[in-house]
Length: 609
Ligand SMILES: *[C@@H]1O[C@H](CO)[C@@H](O)[C@H](O)[C@H]1NC(C)=O
Ligand SMILES: *[C@@H]1O[C@H](CO)[C@@H](O)[C@H](O)[C@H]1NC(C)=O
Ligand SMILES: *[C@@H]1O[C@H](CO)[C@@H](O)[C@H](O)[C@H]1NC(C)=O
Ligand SMILES: *[C@@H]1O[C@H](CO)[C@@H](O)[C@H](O)[C@H]1NC(C)=O
Ligand SMILES: *[C@@H]1O[C@H](CO)[C@@H](O)[C@H](O)[C@H]1NC(C)=O
Ligand SMILES: *[C@@H]1O[C@H](CO)[C@@H](O)[C@H](O)[C@H]1NC(C)=O
Ligand SMILES: *[C@@H]1O[C@H](CO)[C@@H](O)[C@H](O)[C@H]1NC(C)=O
Ligand SMILES: *[C@@H]1O[C@H](CO)[C@@H](O)[C@H](O)[C@H]1NC(C)=O
Ligand SMILES: CC(=O)N[C@H]1CO[C@H](CO)[C@@H](O)[C@@H]1O
Ligand SMILES: [Cu+2]
Image (cartoon, rainbow, N blue to C red; front, top):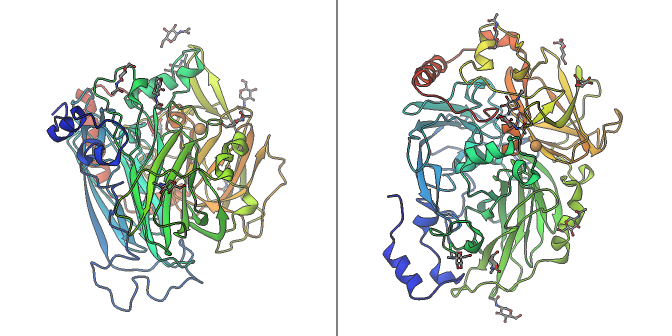
């Protein structure tokens, strides 16, 4: 099955119906495999899952909107949600360009993980990535973005940090608590493998702090590359002196795994179709819809807007915020923003939803992904002729600095004061470095992280070894400090969406130049989330509480930057690790990996995470 032979589709094309018309878009199985993301009238999402009957109404009992900080007072539902992930290579054409990728259950984007706040989630991952479709067998490992993994630090999914990769032909079961609620995603953390298609949304249902009518579910945004991910990583960390080589260009921008592509731009367009079709969403007139925006791409900063509609921001990552109005929303890789949209426009028309790659911050051959918003009752959906709002059209002018919304604007709904006397302050300088052979790597205080897949740091620490003399491990042992403040400064032109595992953090300051050591925005209640942008030529100051023994990656979520070593390990309360119960399966996973790597050469083209 190396090529599609969908007769109905070919007949359609031969019939001359070529272009962007709705009726002639490619069949869903050719573009997105077994996935139904992006089709009109896809099922909307429930308020909470009810398949396991629970007494007393909602599964979170009487926790209501005044005392329901997502990270505290987690309900014990006694329920486990089971998922089975078959990971293997296949050929799909999400934007019309046929290419080999790596998918879960043959779906792109991957299946949604759904749970109620407080449930346990169990995901059995089968690594069936084989030599096929131009790719090779390789390891894998799955990360559940934003989950703190308290007491389950083994299941954070970062290879070389918390586990050995899952060897081809092996399986591994992740088991963790849904210990925060809101919108997130899961993705492979093995090299830049997720950009080959190995990701999907994760929704944890919980109390609402703002009322709405309909949960429209995930709206997954991101840049998209036609080259195989190894090749992109190699180019990014190459010793080419050509900026356009070591800063790779994306080919397209997708919404829920779809967009059209202009095949004339492809070097080889023999298996490229210019009518893949775009995603479609249904609004119910007069109702307020929740859209769970997430940037699941590789490298691009994105602006999101819907023609003719205003949005209200209600959460960033897993943190509810005091609602504010927005004409557009800015998301860098790994970030989520929940918005409410009231369907108050002319219901007979349809409207473009737009996900626009910032050309000031990223490089791409296709800037805009579009999707269609049509109202219920409109049975004859036409291509919209709506136009972008003036404010959204100017989004990129303001974003020359490649930053998130001003910190002043985003107020956590559940206030939390800042500890003004952190146990330790670590200042780290971030820069691009050209090494002796001319290769490009990122340095953090002069060190470039490189992962040893065969000796995960957490497993070493569990055995009582807290010393990582190889500078490439890039481990910071914060011991038993109560709180830690990390200051990142950069003189370089790149911005970085910095993601910390195991925690949500407070953002104290971000701005131009190095931090002055004083300025703190909203110290009585600073912004909290798990991913925030360090702007170009600027600083980002975060602080978090060391309440989660383990080793947690703090890395740039630009896939290519992580590949080029922009990553540190936060070692937290290591002495307590030996008291934690290590599942025996961790050693078994390393045995399987060691056995596989003794007969196969691992082509580790990058830092490994
Ligand atoms: C493929 O590229 C050629 C040359 O640019 C162009 O003439 C042709 O229309 C393209 N095919 C498609 C399907 O876009
Ligand atoms: C498609 O790309 C080709 C080559 O870059 C360009 O000449 C053409 O105008 C593009 N077509 C559209 C509809 O943008
Ligand atoms: C395009 O705009 C015109 C009026 O401006 C309207 O009558 C027509 O229905 C619109 N079409 C769509 C698909 O929205
Ligand atoms: C430079 O970096 C590249 C990519 O990380 C690495 O393969 C190479 O060995 C480094 N060269 C030196 C001299 O360290
Ligand atoms: C680029 O790196 C390769 C090794 O990866 C080395 O052989 C070559 O000399 C380097 N080129 C330059 C210009 O440094
Ligand atoms: C990084 O290296 C430079 C040049 O070798 C040196 O001046 C600087 O002190 C180093 N910085 C750190 C934090 O080690
Ligand atoms: C501790 O772990 C590191 C990294 O795996 C290793 O280099 C070092 O030799 C270990 N030390 C001991 C005492 O085992
Ligand atoms: C606090 O963290 C620093 C590293 O920033 C470390 O040197 C120190 O030992 C830690 N203090 C405690 C009490 O663990
Ligand atoms: C300084 C800079 O490059 N600004 C550009 C940001 O992007 C907008 C729209 O693409 C351009 O008009 C600006 O010139
Ligand atoms: Cu980065």
